[in-house]
Image (tube, rainbow, N blue to C red; front, side):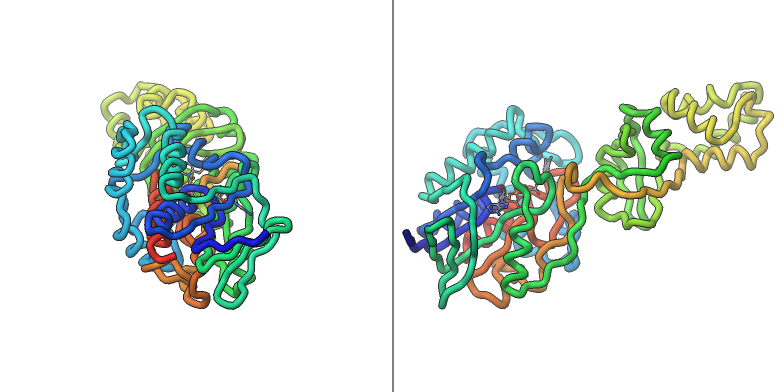
Length: 393
Ligand code: FDA
């Protein structure tokens, strides 16, 4: 069987559904294809099941790309407020958790249901559980091959996402298609991902598993002040996930475990005001007890503070205000929220998301070399880039 469409969208995730809806609303005959049995799985598991669907502080500075200006046009054409309006139109209740992050009050499933309903209203033909055997171009038409069937279209939108969480359908399909059409792909890496450590630091992490502290985690000039979590595999929590998108293998990261306090000054003041106080008790005033205990042990300090030299106190305070550690890797795509790198933005128009070399071929969402910070920015990129492609496909 063969069938002609105006637009074929491959990948019915956040970006793909948005582009299909928008193209459908323009009266285009749209086919939306996904190999997954269940649509929108990443949306469903996002934000702890409540989907952090956007961030009210969305701004180009919250995105990482070889070309940091690439996102400006799409984010302007479809803003966080446009998506909030859509959510309101569907009576989905939401709240700001922190730092401008908007979550559903009830469930991420509401976002999936909303997108599926919008697809239906825009007369999008949805084929799930469908394996695409080949994609190619014939004259001015693109086509996909599904078993013995062939579907043709003027426009083809690739929205197959990144490599994170392969067990719910992530694949390298989008990158392969880009390469097939001669488009450059920037090396991909897991991002927004927990960091792993060699024995000495790992032993500390294991001992402190489950403990969460507010910390400033920095890599070179980039830093994030958010929660940090010790786990039996290493370090996690928002500040670590954020810095993982910047950290490079072989380099150190710096952790300030008590960002609000100049610990060196604090300890020196204490040495004068309470010379007979135990150092362990003093440190546990600024850090959780278990962490204070380990830090004192690691620094070989105990006894009354007056017995410790200023040099020892400075070294102790450095391990609290500026703990320098060397990750040996990440937990990889198995747990990464997103993928760094992807289709080189030089290959795509930032205004339309269409390939510069191949008119009618679009790339949107996470498959493109655009990665948002943690906090709803990645979905906003999916909505914005999806909207834009939907206007031009
Ligand atoms: P997405 O991955 O959503 O969709 C791609 C689709 O393509 C999938 O449906 C897949 O099945 C399909 N596909 C892949 N290969 C195919 C093939 N060969 N043939 C056919 N179909 C194929 N972001 C955020 O802003 N807020 C949040 O709260 C979270 N939370 C979060 C939690 C977890 C656990 C993860 C893993 C990720 C997040 N994210 C997030 C990131 C966010 O989920 C992600 O950036 C977007 O889903 C990307 O949208 P896309 O549509 O580009 O890809």
